[in-house]
Amino acid sequence: GDQMKSLLGKLGIILIGLAIFAYGEVWGAEWRSWREWLEIIWGNAEKVSATVNGNLVQGWLLRATEKIRPDGILYLHGGTFDLEKPILNRFTDALSYRVMGYHVFLLKFPDEDGMIPPNPNLDITAIRDAPILFRGMVDIDKIHIITVSRGGYPGLFAFQQHPDSFETITCMCPPIHTENEAWLEPQHTWAKNYLRQKLPSPMVLAEQGAYTYLASRMLMIGGANDPVCHPSSQSDKFAKTVGCRSIIVPKYAHNVSMSSMAREEAMQFIGGR
Image (cartoon, rainbow, N blue to C red; front, side, top):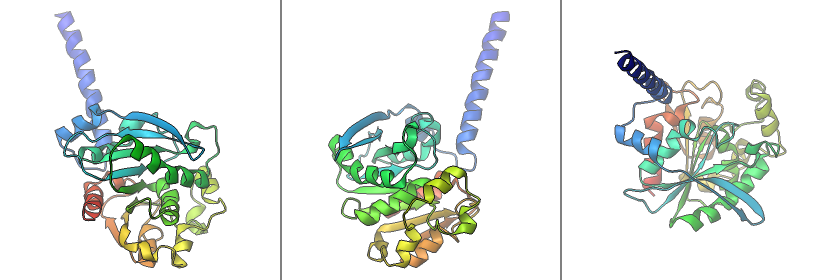
């Protein structure tokens, strides 16, 4: 009897833990299908690295296993953390693109090991070189960039500088107008240091017309309640300047990449090309 109670107690703890994990994953996001969850939890993520053009490029390859599409996705994550530590619970949206049939390359930014100071110029170089490593591992036709938050900043520079390497870019809650002091000052120290590098922001480039001819290949997605990168000062403002598509997802904040609406819009945009 005591053994049975102990066993049931342990089982209860495991189930509570799984429930908390599931709740944490979908907080502010929609429930996913069981098949998608199993794919996300059990699917392999291959750690890869190579020297390309004299620069170390690192990341994770998420290989599609069913209904494989011809194109690949270069995923540029948000946040300032080390990509290796929270890969499962941080990047379920990236893993979900694999479930949809895309090979996904989840780029690791150069500063993530803490050995190199954050520098958008190094990020841009890594994004520039990533397709060479990506194409060496899987057979893909076009490469589409999908970015979240921080990833959108270097992603937009790389897309503008190397438009022949990428078919489209979709940016979710990106920081774009970084000269805007009213917006920049409340950001953390890391972000302020990173975004004050000697680069004109994507917004400045947009005002100079640098993205106009690329507008049909760009999609901006923002969360209507985002206190960090509100669409009115970032994604939507940029889209209006460039003339590209802009989507504002109701009820979502800086977690907009977790919404099914954002994922579906990104997939329709990519798939329609």
